[in-house]
Length: 320
Image (cartoon, rainbow, N blue to C red; front, top):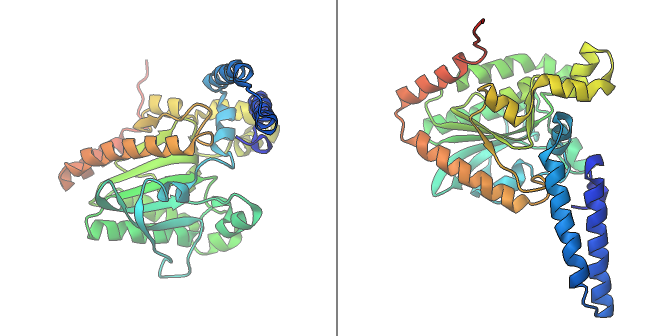
């Protein structure tokens, strides 16, 4: 993990990593054997990382989910999928680079993959609109989902967005209608569907790709109706109350699993997915393969019945 990208609570880890790297550099330059000096530091580093990540607060998990070195949709498309062919445009207005979509191969099968894509620098973020799709992005996604149903291809969505773009042009072109249509049609598509929250799952912008047979979340991802900052600004008129808002929103993977809103938590490598992207990709591939195998064995009528039951029971409660 580069120190320049260390989160506030990760700075002790970054400092220890810097010390270890400096010792290694000196050993190379001066041909010194510093293994005895490095070993206890590496042991201390592992213990520190484990202790910090074992006790993350909800808002610290939000920060990890937003980490600029966290793997994005295209990173997974380049590691666990093969033969990806990107398809563009909604056939109505234009292409939306905030959503990448196309066909690919996964585990020996053809699939449709749809992912929300952020950028890692200013130029890329402007191109990808900071991962906030316009209505044409959601219409492109729905076009690809319909194609998956037509050719009997499973659909996999990778969710990572602060939310749908709220600009005037997006609203004029029917942002709310595009999201609502995705929700409606995803509920009845006759093909196995899996959604994975790989980073931020923000509001309807995320839900528009989330009405699927299985909803999975990485351990340090978040999924919520609004960002902590937005919630704090509305409830307390003070965006600095974001930590309080994050606690109240119950946006972490363990919270959502307990509420029955997601189906499984994908463990992350120690230090988060940004610390070991290859291990994160391997974990995602393993879980996706297992769930796809289970869903592909179900007849369409059973698949749709289970999907409907899954979402209809959300929000039910009993009064004591």
